[in-house]
Length: 304
Image (spheres, rainbow, N blue to C red):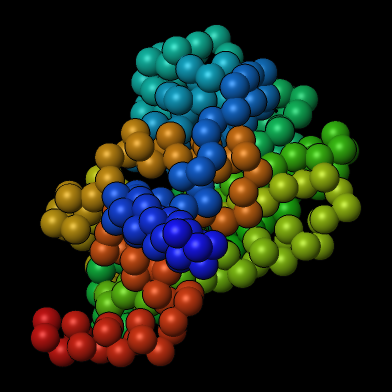
């Protein structure tokens, strides 16, 4: 074979390999090339919001196994205390009440947490709330609650932690559990999508503004993960949706999602997408070929 034939054969083989790898992927290909850095979390102080259930709860379990010192935050102290007792190393964890929608609670939190640990190496912004109603139906107070929890409260807590801890200690890491709904819109998720788009954009700015402060920012965009997010979502007037969603019920296992998040954090990745297909493919299309993506979304919406 001549050189050209060899090159073409290698390129074809590589394309086929990458295509098969992509079909089997449950995260973006950059993340899947990485592995968890050994002992990365050992003795680091990690503050996890939304720690009482779902992704946050599982992150705490895996972080404790990895030797991290934990601050668990949520509104339910009963759930936090139960989780704390079940951790691999409960002696290295503390529960702290935090209502991310309460400005005063958020304002006080960083100073009060100083009594628990004298540093915060990693802040994982996981607290969040979703919605299940159309843009025309949602009431103003409900829309404001979604934006307060998923964007504003999270941003104000981040600012407080950076000022109180990370700037003083010479660095840190902010991790934002966003969503693929922050990459493309989805019906009945209007303000949820707006908050996640906003969170991704805001934290991209934070990363650039603090480039010389040794502060890393990682935006995590999961697709459907099997949690109680649908049951806990809000209806138009703010009441609990209380219903399971087949898309969520068939989603990724929370253990795998948390595992991938910790891999992303330990490798200092800026943004990662965590999902099975077709949502992973939709995320790639929305970023690489927006016109094709919106055409396909319109076709799907008309048929459903």
